[in-house]
Length: 546
Figure 1: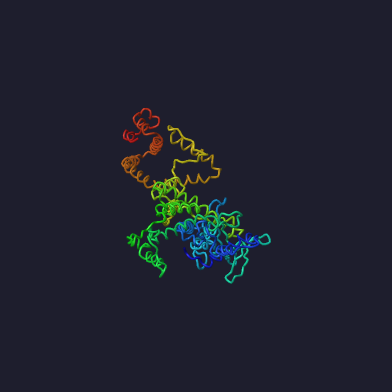
Figure 2: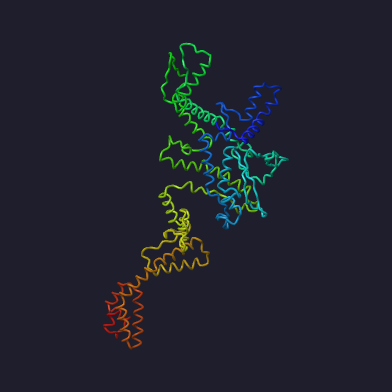
């Protein structure tokens, strides 16, 4: 067992005398044995049923407790703790607030001697072991929090004085200093009154952890005695007490056959001496099963999944991911909410509580495998909920330098469900479609364009820009194919000297452009029907061109 420190002993003395005060004062007289037991309990802590004394520091000698405390405190300390500012007309948006001094205190450096990681890790360790964590708040001249100093729970306690909550801190010289509640960040664990949290180690889980420590001590003693070679030596006669024969025999036996280094040796017995074991073997005592059960007990006390304490007996590759999600939801999230609420209460000024708030980023703990994450990002990207820069930020990549990563993309076939666009029949001609669009534009000209409408307009512009080059290439090919015909028409126009004939020719060209291709062929073939339109003086060559 590890030796208790002076601080542990002082803390144990205070707790013991407070808990036994009524018992001591209520008795008229106590025996010397009772006083001796009380003094032992005051100095080393109250012993458990297993006969082992349990304190917060001694409990860390148990590997399961050490692992539970480090995994919870380390996980909480590793999460980014960000100070946000609410933005937008309805305060639903948020942005980081690095200009506030509290941002640096929570995220980077808590005080000149500690990083934010160290401060949060130490504070959460105090809360897990002692049930409460305390930090001294240092503000600048403007009232902003610039430093946070952790205080050991054994040196401070909350009290009520004149109806107000204060904190009494024990100084190094033995004096007590009263500190107002506004200068102490106190984050309690589960408790009965809401002001002070239970100590998991010394109050609630003392018997369970004591049993586990006793099992560890027993296992060590078993191996120290050589495993299974324990019992009595039977001698047919009587050993003489002169010259310490019995003591010498025991001493020689221990030197030759006891201990791990001597395990497995064959004992040589003389003069009819026999060895008879007196106790069961560690296998009979199910020592390994007991130690495994103790791991599960510690996991229950700290609300952890067994695989987090490296107990993988019932773990499979199919359920580890689900257990990791349970770890975040059942263990880390309630602790993070507890921290966030107390930070908002104690560290943010009253006039800024509606604007600023602190939040842990739990997304990093909920990340799945790379393929699943990118599939989810792709769905968000295609539906306009995520842009390229936001996607890259989640992958710890920089933004696109030209700014194109800030654009939100969405399918063009999506419309507002509350205001769907009317469908047009397939047989509607282009002229009718244009008229309908003009009517709708005129109808809504006096209405305010919504955000969704603006998004639709921007998407149309984006599509137009994206297809601009394709359109011009197609138009270029059309012009190249029609160039001989255009040159022929231009040459014909040069040969026309009669202005009246030119006006009539131009009118025919305008009429023919408004008709379909098949109608143009019909007009060109049926000269009799076009006589009222085409002058008789137009030559056969001119009609062929038309």
